[in-house]
Image (cartoon, rainbow, N blue to C red; front, top):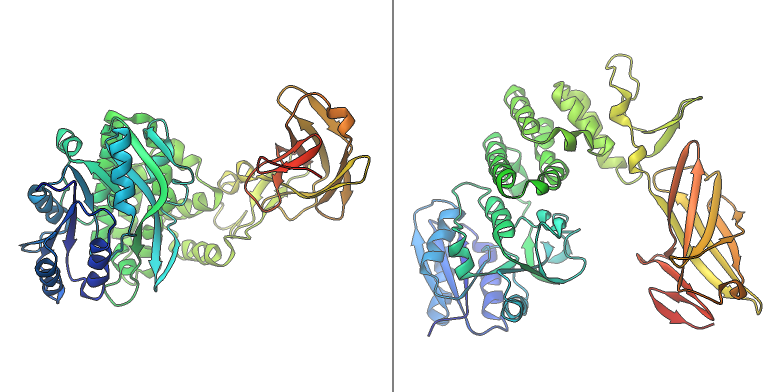
Length: 480
């Protein structure tokens, strides 16, 4: 009988983790599936573990090949797979029990070509957020596409998905050889798909292995590894340039945010001649769009500037600064007649290095932080207490204006200051008899900087709303 889903698992020297992976596949709530195990020339006990599972569970099939890498191993598994749907899992990872039922069920309902979901990192037995996927799966959305939902350009892994087999074959998808075989395929699938389902729930636990001389972190900063990563980046950019050029800026921004870290790590660890790594780094930057390089965050621009100039000692200083101060690195105003806002980083206006001021320019990175902390009914009016500040600026906002808006009307409010960041105002419900619901808007001004935004609800990431006769949090009315 032909199964609904085929899960292809390439295996290479993952003996300590393989049992947990295969148990998670055997425990899937979707019964109508097969698991195609492809041993890629393992020299540890991985093949024995895979053979035991194949002997115990008829849904498991074991294939073998000489060591060619995960891409060719996956391709061999696809050729043997019989399912109408395809999925991939790595032998050191774990798949939550309901993942494939959820993803395959979504495809059956919508007719989309692939379904994808959120990922967590598995670190020492505990689950953490995957920083690669952190901005992608905040809300589920069915029948969408990467050109409409461009945050999907960050979803460049193949194993948090289920694909229609006929789509895979129609699109001519296949894994290349090399270390980064999945990135080009993931991007091609997103672009070539007619529609994509984002399920929003966690469907994959991606293990982080750091221990040992052959650890992931060390391999990623080796020169041959970096060269392969650059080749994968170039392959994706060439494909996007031809088929979806509107995605290039988003992809380049992701490369600057995530991938260039490994270049910096290689230079920090370099004990011999740094020339080859510097040459590769410059080639890496030359492959990206100049607009994205210019619009990178200020601290990353400083790192890239030092990389281009081959200033490795100074780059290491900035990298150390980032590790110790990234979350609290301040932005400060400079200038008397004309004020600009710069990152408070090493080497600003260093006479020896003469780095241009625009490298440190952080004005576009400043964000208004405005929150409502309490709303109290006095019997005649509502007293609102909150706070207003600017992220990464350790200064009191000089001027704050607040008003209520329902999209049609604007009702100004008298604002009073409380200490460094506190603000209070009162709302007379008689002024709001028509219209609503109302949202609280703020304008902050300091040293030539003007920022506007909506007040958030306490520590939540939702707008604070007010409606007569009560106020609401996260859109839920809470009568007083």
